[in-house]
Length: 213
Image (cartoon, rainbow, N blue to C red; front, side):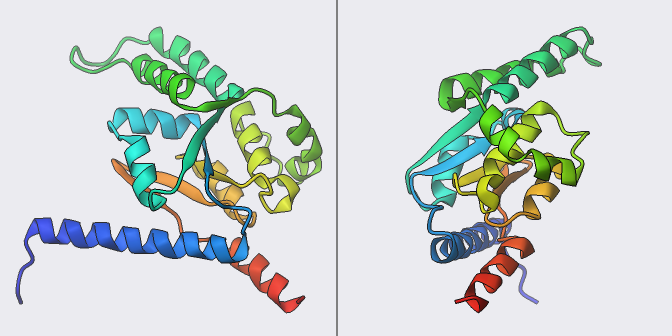
């Protein structure tokens, strides 16, 4: 068998991710036309910290994944408050090694990125109150205030009518959003930005709409 050069394998993987992203965006263009450029990407604290830790150039990666369409990054005030609290708590813990960066530094840098590069969503109370029954049904008692706000913003109307993409490393939040239709998810695999394929909930919702035509 002919062995591929490592650089060729990396290029093939990159092309494969780009092709998958194009298919995903095409699905949303056809079935959820409210998800259109300029795209709105809602970043949570776990994603921001991971991007800082892995030195990911987010704007460049988002632009490439979204086929150089216009987009804006957004962050909730509750996410910024959460990062500030985590930074204060981590500052009290001494790093395990002299060369190891303090966790509080990552939280500080992540919060600063949100302040400098993102549109800040100040008040989510109206949307959260509207979705209170859904929240209770799903028993999100373990969700932070920031995660509750993100979930409610991205599922408003039952079909993400505010048209948010969500970028998160939180498995619980991701699972909850995958169960709702038309919520595109970004995540980081170390330094690689990934746009998930449409969830089964999105495909089922689309199938039901087509059957009812």
